[in-house]
Length: 117
Image (cartoon, rainbow, N blue to C red):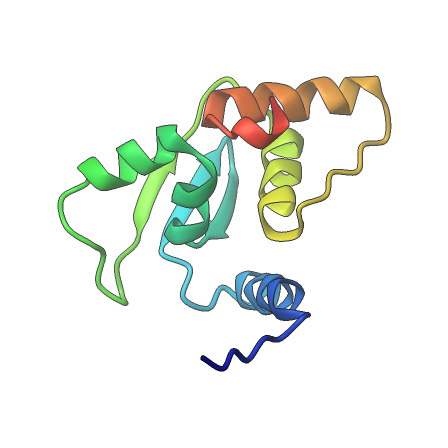
């Protein structure tokens, strides 16, 4: 058996997903908190969160290219949500202080992101 392997596969994948998310390409979920909308990929959300996997799996059918799932969030701050989404696309969290860290951990708990619990 022969195996071909790209040692940078995971990094390249994350970089490309970050690029697509930044350009809102193929993003099929809109997370809304207050007036802020965050475009994300459902496959990334469902891979990181059993809560969102269940929520998205219970939604009626996959959205068409012109339609998106919309999830209105409560109990999280815009800054906490944005930092958690950044984590999903990078595997890294950077907080300016304890207050922001609490917001991020609260958002992660609300979204069921186990890697940040």
